[in-house]
Image 1: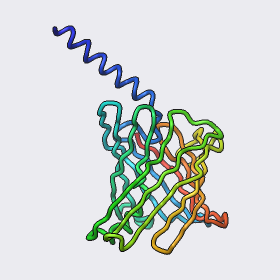
Image 2: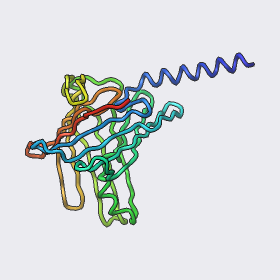
Image 3: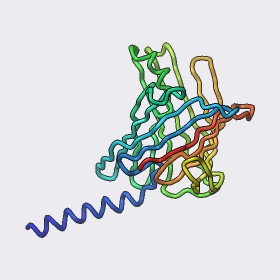
Image 4: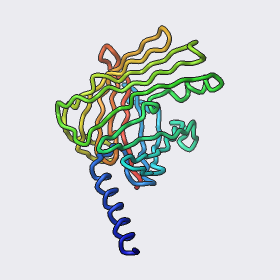
Amino acid sequence: MKKISCILVLLALLASSVFSQDCTLYIPGTIGTELHYQTTNAKGKVEGIYTQKMLSVKENGSQTTFKLLQTIMDPKSPESIIKQDTFEFRCDGNVFYIDMEKYLNQQQMEGFKDMEVKISTEDLVYPSKLSTGLELPDGSISLEIGDGILNMTTNIVHRKVEAYENITTEAGTFKCYKISEDVKSKMGFVNVQLHNLVWIVQDIGTIRNESYNKKGKLGSTTELIKIIR
């Protein structure tokens, strides 16, 4: 009986290992890993700094959930923390999902903390294998605030893998998938449209992100500047 139990446990561990290999992560897979980012405007002035740290990895059947802590610091005083939030990512089978709540303006949401907020999302999807020319599914998030007093929506559309190329930042040189996407946001009668170019790499995530306005003018650039493992 003991031998049978040991074999069953071993098979379960092997199944878990195979699953983990099937799902390609675009975040760090190791607890404790820290990613340090810097955001600059079109003139190269630093406007923001933040870190992302992997907190936990939990498996439940075919699904694995990853919890990550994001810490936003004052660029003029990096030791001063402005805000911290946790975000969840998941692998289900061999597909990697990014929770669209990650794209909410957390400071803006503070203004609605005493109001009823209904959120519906369609998470961003990354298949196990990317290739140049591949079109990716859209993502979206919708908020109904105060029983319909205010509605907010963000849609990430026209996602496409444009290239597989090297990107160099202060953190090093990485072979990345370059993904283009359009971000369309609406709050009340206000509409904002951006075009993003994002470079991502397996087991880390975003290496560089360039954001352009609807006229094609560069607005900001975010880069990975340090990795602590």
